[in-house]
Each structure stands twice: as structure tokens, then as C-alpha cells.
Amino acid sequence: MKHFKHIFSAIAIFLATSAIGQTTVMDIISGSPDHSSLRAALFQEGLNTVLSDASAEFTVFAPTNASFDALADALGTDLNGILALPNLSDVLTYHVIGAAVPAADVTNGAIVDAVSTTNTLKLTKTSTGSVYANQAMVVGADLTADNGVVHSVDAVLLPYETVVDVAIDNGFNALATAVIAAELMPALTEPLAEYTVFAPTDQAFQNLADIVGIPLEDLFTPEAIAPEELAQVLIYHVLGSEVLAADVTNGAIINSLSQINDLKLTVKNSGEAFVNQAQITATDIMSANGVVHVLDGVLLPNETVVDVAIDNGFSTLATAVITAELMPALTDPFVFYTVFAPTNDAFDALAEALDTDLAGILALPNLADVLLYHVVAGEVESTDLVNGPVPTLNGSDISVDLTSGVMINDATVTTADVFSDNGVVHIIDGVLLPPSAGINEATDAIVNVYPNPAVNTVKFDGNESYNYTIVNALGQVVSEGTTSNQRVAVSNLKNGMYTLQLNNENGSLTSKFFKN
Image (tube, rainbow, N blue to C red; front, top):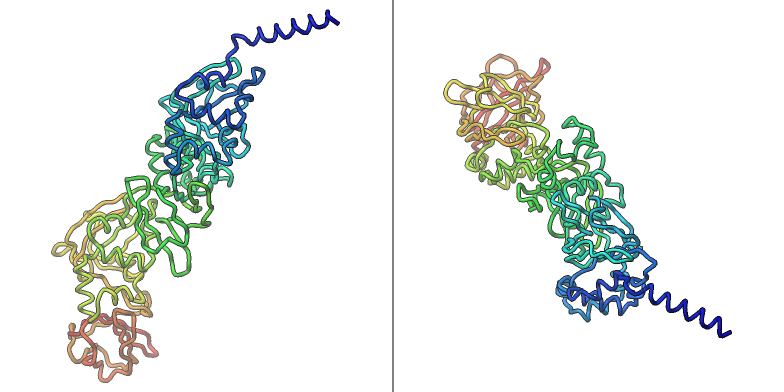
């Protein structure tokens, strides 16, 4: 028996001796004056024993004392409050990987399992060599122990589901790839931030790749787009606050994290909602650091013809575009337009001529038609204009007259060639009024009426009798009856512009006239 006691004593002495000289990740943390808060937390939760296991392998992302202080300040508490967190053990094990990973082995975009099973860690290695775990930057790398490695980090990691997790967990593969390529993972995994993310689907990115003519897998490469430009595109989809779908209002112009341009929101009467040209197809996917809304298109921070109007004081035109729910069409960065833009004074003059005000103009039943009558498909510079008719998005033609300056119908171009990324704007001093609703230019012949402007009656050539309808610029029928001796009484009409339509069994005739 004494012999066996000697053997056991020898084994114990051997084991104790073999442990001498071994350094564990816990030893590194305990010996660092910058990690005393972490040490206290680990000892309190009994995790010091786990990290002292010389037979295991660990990577520990070790927050500094300053990191714990910053978290305490953000939560309105102190270190004791942090140590009292009910999920402190889960938070601490979220900083630990069950394998040794030197900084040189970290790959950009790696998503790795932590000892905590609550969430995965998202690793970033930037083009400058900086390494991040989620939002925390490694400020002291490769503190090597016999059972692993310690990386000192400048923030405490929290195993919260973030907007990045929403993208990853819901199949937004292209968006996640773009965020990794743009090195935005650290920003968007900040657990105590508040974001709203308008998230394009994979199909939206595929559509963008098709437009620019490259494979989707090449869309986020430096050869296709510089990383800093990609980052600007992506943060153009992000707001620095939480905005739920119920809080989206029609015509709201809001700041994104990109400083290049604002986002324009549209809520149609039908309930459909848009951000710029992209429709919101799903809303209010919540995470711990914000909300995600799904888009069917990719937003680009390009200056559009809408921005030209907003940035140059065309407030009435901008308000009209919002009211007519045309913002999505005109903010499309991939479609080019020519816009003949009436000034605020031009709208005021129209309101006065119609004996109404701006509210009356915005209440026009044909407001969208009026506005689209000012828009031509494609980019038409002033040097490209020629005399004659030009089709508009309204479907009717405007008339270009270059005899003296540039006239569009009865309006003068006062400033030409204000360029944007999706077209050109020409400023005009009058509002163009299209043929009224119910009048078909394609089939109705034009009849000459006189005097024009008229006071008491308008006359027209011919010897036939017609049923007539007079429609004002609001699209309202204001007079109708049967003609008498090729005359129509207009003395009871208010001053303004009108459309006369004549109908009989032989066809229809139309003409515009002014009443003074």
C-alpha cells in the first residue's frame, strides 16, 4: 500500500510540475490591468475555470475596462449594474470561440459560432488590415496562451439580433455580400444603435446587375464599383433612427446615412409605399437595433430631375409631383427624362387665371396628366429641340417654336439645360395645360375659334350644328348645349383657359380658348 502511495504522489508531483510554465487565456486576462472588469465578470460567473482549462482551445475577444465603462454609460448604470445583468454569462461566452484563431487567420465576412449559442459572431478584416468582431475593433491582437489566443477589443459584444442578422437569416444574400464587401458589418452590428434599413431583395440586385450588364457575382467587386462608392450606395438605404411603416408619410424627404442625397417617400392612396422608385414589399421586420423594410429595387444616391426641382426652389412643382404620386417614376435613376419645369410664379399665375389658389391647383382631377404633359421621355438638350410637335408622357404633344427664343406651347423657356443624373430640366414661365379629360387629340380634329381670347361668345367656321361641351382646366364641365349659328355663349364663364368640344353625327372637333 505504501508503494502505491508513492506512485500517486509521484503522479501528482508530475502533473503539478507539468502545469508550471503553462499560460492560459485566463492568465493573460487576469494579468492585464486593462481587463480587470472582464476578470471580475468571468470570476463572478465561474467562467475563469473554463478558460483555465489547459486541454482546451479558445479565442477570447477581451473588452477593455473602457469598453465596460462605455456600455455602463450607454445603459445608464455602472460596473455593478453590468455585473448584475441576468444574461451576463451569455454575454461573456459570446466573446469566446472554441478554437484558436490568430488575427492573420481572420477572413473578411466570416460568420463563426461563439461558445454562446444565442448568436453568431461576424468577423471583418478591412482593406487596411483592421480586424473586428461585430462592432468591436481588435486593438491588441494575438496575445498567445498555451490554450488559445486573446484579442483585446474596444467594445463589449452583445448577442443581440441586429439588422445584419435579419438580412442573413431571411435570405438577403446579395445584400449581405455587399455589406461585407463594403466593410459595413461593424457599423450595422452595433447593438445599441437604432437603424431603419430598406433592404433590396436578391432579385433587385439581379435587376441592377442586368441593367449595368455584368454578372451578379461581379457586382460588388472593386473592378465593378469602388468600395467607398459601394458603401455610399448601401448606407443610402439606411436611416439613423427607427421608422416603422405606420410612420411613413407621403412626400416625406428624409436624411439617410449617406450625405450625398435624401430619400423621397411616397404613400399612394392605394396604400402602396415607395422609397424613391422602389416599392416597399414587406415591412416592420424587427431586430434589437432597428427595423427592416423590404424593397423591390436598389436605390442609388443619384441626383434626379426631382432633386433639381427641390434644390432650386420649385416648391410648388415638387408639391404637385408629390400630390400626384409621381415621385417614384421621376426618381428612377435608370430612366431618363426631359422636364419642362414651371416656376412657382407660373403656378401662381395659373391659379389666378382659374380664380383659385394653390390648393385648387393641387385638387385638379387631372393633376397627374397636367404634370406628365411637362415630361418628355429621354434626355433632350436645348440644342436638340426643333420646331414642331413633341410627344409627352401624358400621351399628348407639346409644340416647340424656335422662332423667337424657345417657346413650349405658350410658355417661354427662361433657363435651359439644368442637368441631373437621370435627365435634363428646362425652366419655363408658364404651366402647360394638356387637352382636357375626355378630349382625344388623336381622333378629334382641331377647329379654329375666334375671337381668342373671347369675352361674350366664341365663333367657329362652318355651317353645321353641334352639341357642345366646355371643360375648364380643372377637368370640370362648366357649360353644355347646342350651338346656334356657329356661336357659343361664354359670357357666364370666369376668366381662364377652357376647352371647347363640338360633336355631331359627322365627328368631333376641339379647340382651346381663353375667356377674358
